[in-house]
Image (cartoon, rainbow, N blue to C red):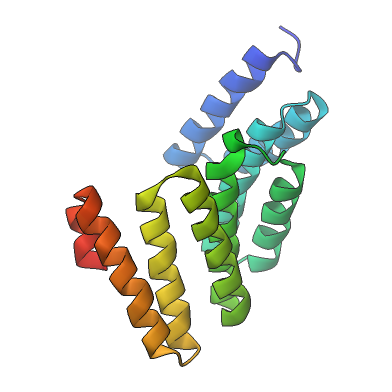
Length: 171
């Protein structure tokens, strides 16, 4: 099977997730290779999904510059369509995390707002609730407790409306 065959790339994507979960040290090189080959084969969505996962791992290791580069490249490679709303929101949320880890709370707040809007557009109240919680944390960091309370109140309302009991506790 050709390396650019969509079925092979999809299978390698599943292998990538498995290796990541197992903690296999080869996952990173495989992921980077898969991003390149997926892009070359016109599989922007797969490339972006893998890049986002690589960015999350990099961020967890404290490699915020690398995480930011991966996330921005993933976002720039994605088409703007209803099918990519969830992934674009995930990218924005993770960019917010990167900025928050750096202490850049204004940029983090902007990224979380973008994630919330994308979740609103997608019709995902659970994702919107998560974005609101992140926005509230940034409002607190920015010395805006009234805004934080407003965001948390909206988050709680969404959690109750959707029956998300754990979300109620977190709001």
